[in-house]
Image 1 (cartoon, rainbow, N blue to C red):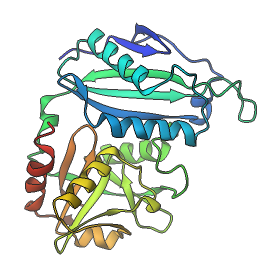
Image 2 (image 1 turned 60 degrees about the vertical axis):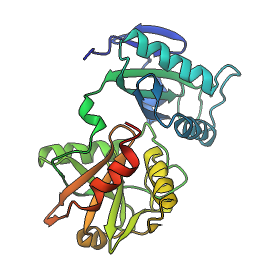
Image 3 (image 1 turned 180 degrees about the vertical axis):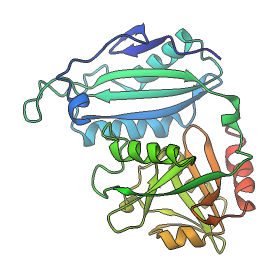
Length: 282
């Protein structure tokens, strides 16, 4: 697999170690921006339209003012150009970061959306359901807020970063974050689904999770196939008492969870769901 040797920054292909921002950059200072993680597979971005919809929604919510050329086609073309330059032709992770420029918290210079794109080669195992179940647990030290911005993949990612550090220290594969009410929001890099009495349940967007592209896609696919699906409150007790648990994100699609804390889960419906919903995509 090829390492990433180049990146795309505001219209230019540069070496991957090129220094790009000043000490006064608002994204560096305040997390003023957001990012989008996509999967490149066999010459295209998987779920491209959903990713672009979320990206331009975030631009609007965060009050960026893109120039006329800053279109979906411009971003896709830039990704294609960088994937080719890095020779990540078949399978890659793409990270699109958009950030505001220099300024203090009250005196930004402008609202131009600086565009940074990076790509990395992916292991082909990312196109399969994991054979070994994930071992996860709840990280209680950080609280995921439920507000207008909690649905976005903000550059202010501190709670998730600390949860990921904690998970690594405890030899876990991921960590669950709770919202202010003590209910499940999401995991550090994924949305959470539980199966209880045949119903597939995921925290509603009002509970504070990131509005995941794969979450949106899987919910639609489940509903179209006649599964009983619910978006709502998922308590810690609901998670503990679930028969099965799986996590979703744009890179691996779906991964099944074997254990959360002291609770273990079955592995019955998840492989079927993966085969039915994910296998054709990958």
